[in-house]
Length: 126
Image (cartoon, rainbow, N blue to C red):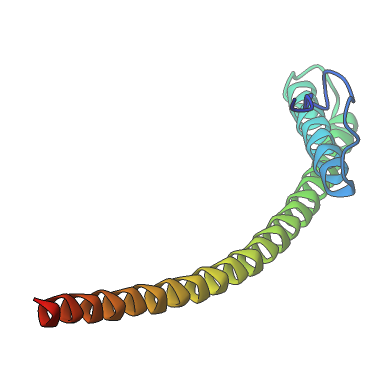
């Protein structure tokens, strides 16, 4: 019977790896930053604030956008590392497949030779 795998949001039945935790944390941080940016822009453009408050909101928006870019860059690096790791695994699998294919080819050639030898033996016995 297979073990159930639950979504990390609905219940932590399986213990996530550190990579999964980092992905989830990064996704949560990015969502929080984007919500904060939306709110800051909404308040900033509402027109009910004086110039000093709008300038402060502008600085906050700039800081949030920098944080967002840094987080996206970090996520991109993690994705690139994961792709590189999986490509190494695929390369190893390709090597094993080629080796097995070579072995099967040799076996098939051997069977062909034995078949031909048996046919020649049968023809000579007739």
